[in-house]
Amino acid sequence: MANGYSRINEQGETAPKGFHYMPDGTLMSDAEHIKIYGELKIARSITNFTMETDDIPSSATSRGFRVVGERGAVFGVQVSDGEGKFYDFKTMTFTSTFTSQNRLSITMSGGSYSGSILFPADADGQTYTVFLFASPHHNSELSGFSTDKVSYTTTISQLADTVITFAPSSTNTNNYTSGSLASGVNATSTASPITTTENPITINWKFTNASHDSYGFGLIVDRDPVDTDWYFQTTEAISSNPAGDGVSNDKVTVADLTNISTGMELIYHKGTTAPSSTTFVTAIDIRTKTLTFSTSQTFEDGETMTLRASGSSNIEKATGALIDFSTVSTIKDPLTKTVRAAVSSSTTVTLDGTYGVGKGATVTGVGFSNASSNPVVSVSASSSGGSMLMTTAQTLKVGTKLYITPNVQSFKIISTPVVSRGSTSSVTIYLNLDNFVTIGTVS
Image (tube, rainbow, N blue to C red):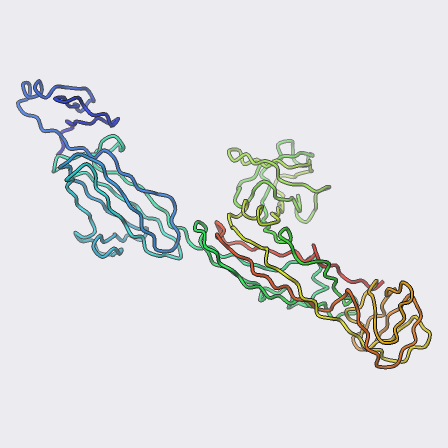
């Protein structure tokens, strides 16, 4: 066993020539030691172990290590995973059985030794423990960087890939067919939360106005989607309102800060109750888990808040995901109707079905008079009949084809979000249709 006599002390300081450190840390001359004790066996020190221990991705990753010490010092390295397997330094794989190949044994021939470990791909994530051992039987010990003279350990976490789901969202669900907003249209991306690799996701969503007498008055696409139309949303229960339960205040404490960041908008301060004015998270005290908001609200203990991060920058702050939403466009399917019965000097135009037509729409067609402002005033809805009331009287033949704008019955969104880094946990990112789609009305 090592006797504790060393040229290097716990602080990594080297003794002057001809001196050594005693077990209590004091200096003693070699000659004086031999005079008193008869012999002197100096322990050979391992003075440092360095290895990058940042998290690694789910893909296979190699990490180098370096051991610094005195010539002749003997040490060993072992690596285990969370399943009880050990790294085989010859095959560079993890094995269930332990053999001599699962321990790297080195006698220092110089001042340092460098090696590497190949961590295998693991989509579910893993935790690895790296062990460094000094060999007391060879009068070797760890010095300076470890409180234990025999062993030192460090861990490396391998993070699992996470899934980002892209989904459309609208509060006007009655105005869309059920298939338009169904989960079956969602697109997904599986990516690492720590590596940066461009991963484009193809989105081709079609949205159709409900064929319904109460909701079938068309959809008006005001513009193409923009970055801030995409959002992430989460909920968090209020632990306490420091000002008092239900008292107007701009601060609350919560139990968990996961996926919460500054810049998020407070959508509901309890249940589905919206705040009295637009409110954002302006500061977060990580130590006390206190959120500060831009306005005061009547926060109640135990109630659930809904918070939303809109736009790629805020989404990244909240989830860690790095996403580019710049490639996106809309394609509108033209809306046409046919005159069902002859119209003679009347503002009521009969149609072979009105779905898609709504108040304010512009109508054109052969023989259709738009000499003055002539928007649709109202609609008498029907799937196969019905009519629209115009501002200006019309005289039209049966079968006249009419073109309706800007209302449509259906449109597509074509987008290619590029995920360069995954989220820290699996999340859903929504496209808020309500930001750029106006719902047509009957009158």
